[in-house]
Amino acid sequence: MNLFYTLLHFFQKRGYYVCQRIADRIGIRAKIVRTSFMYLTFVTVGFGFALYLFLAFWIRIKDIIYTKRSSVFDL
Image (cartoon, rainbow, N blue to C red; front, side, top):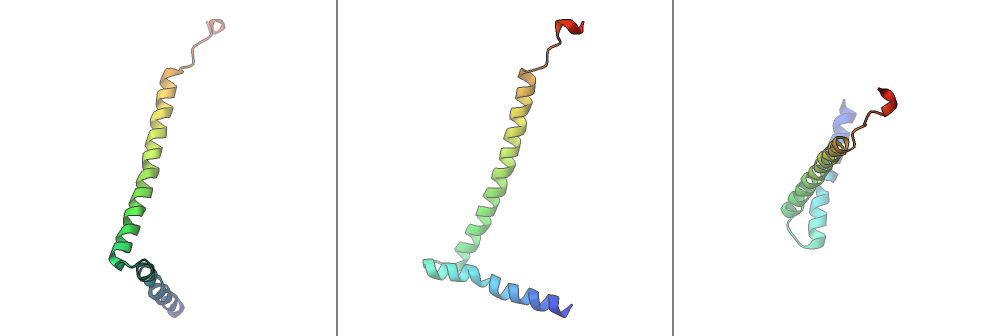
């Protein structure tokens, strides 16, 4: 369990510093970089969900328009 906490502490210490380094390089505050990453995450998740809904709607419309008609020989 001690190895787990050591590993967790390592990633927390190094991982939170990434936004600060990006902000220092660009010349803006780290808070803006963090919120930009959050907004970008919401946009990408929202885009995937919107694409799923669009494709489901399109397949439903296709099934309504192109219904399989019974053949004359099926009678």
